[in-house]
Image (cartoon, rainbow, N blue to C red; front, side, top):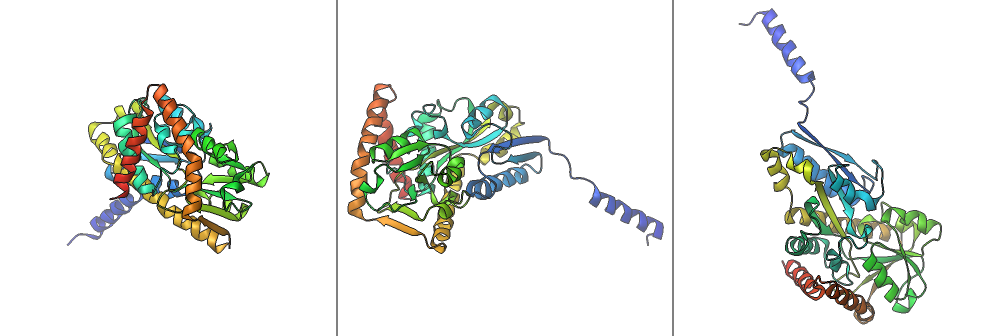
Length: 343
């Protein structure tokens, strides 16, 4: 039998081991993004991803998350923060830097989006086929979209004519062009400015997906929400989740594999699924408030599609003229959305 002194020593060692700090990570990666931590993507996509990276690296990688532009800058500067190594990983909206990703804009075109999951898979496949040159300055972890875009307004929008003169926030150059052709007055701004702009009357309505409405109190600031018949939403926005290339390159091969195993089209799909789940939460929240949820019928939706068609025509012509084969890009985007939507 062990003596009481030996037993006491073993107990002491066990207590000391339990109280010892966890082994420090070999690599700490700073992740910066523009939404509050309770928003859909930070909570339902980025946080689980970071936890999975830390677990699969056996604690050798630590992901430090910085929300709501805590490290400075604006949402439009996040891509450069990753490119220049100011931070290691970012998540942002491509449309916040107009003209920088001209080929990616094809997914902003009207009535492209189906579900966020299917359209995100389509967009990532499109990236792998057409967009690697536009993102050559970073290590792309995934690109994705949000779900069917719709209008959230102070006054009901029940027909195309109700758009006339309405000041509506748009999130990208293409979306603003669409809003203009639909008869409204577009006001460009990041989503982070929506709450204040609605409160102060700078805008009368906004284009954001359901999933982010709660984070910015939109259902409490407006009473009307207008969606569309059929399988396609009015618009979507495109996002990139990217890593500084040098931060990736200096990882040992086994940790590069952890990052690679958690990147690509499956990650894009996961971000899309989070968006789709967030949309359901947003819709239910607005219903509980008693808000007016409008779904335009097939005939009225067709009027909007016809009114928005010049946005598609103008974009493809301009892209063709710029030598980036806009007609081909649009055709491929439509086919990929159809392919992944059918799965």
